[in-house]
View (cartoon, one colour):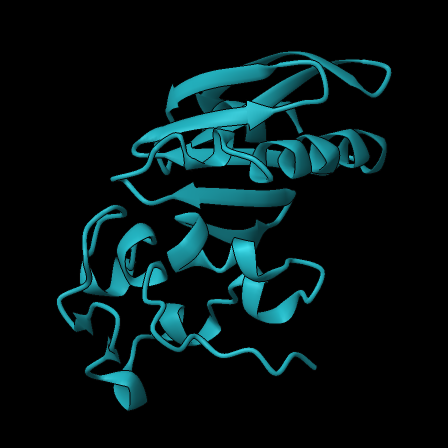
Length: 168
């Protein structure tokens, strides 16, 4: 178990959407006091209670990955890793050492069918070993569909979720 703590980091309170509070991604939560913490922590929404910052739980991520330093919040999704950029630093993920490590995750992910997605503002970028697919704005009712040649991603598009469900 990691001994890490949020400390003065509150970046998740800015980059994550919180449906229960109608808080959009990219704006500070009304209950957050930046660099101090949540003013309603004991009564925080379920989404916040279940949130897991990868930096807190994965000791393979060194101190440079702490969100308030890197300007990146790492989370997992059903099919991979999401890297959410502080809106004031939409290209933070392109800086080293982050860019190289993200590329390594994409290489490993290709073999294990794990996607690596960067969320910069409202844009989503699928990172693969060979290239980046700028998918634009992906709505909650939309899904990313990868076109594969073997295990290699050769194209990616965004479709309505209902279209994906119809194919299954």
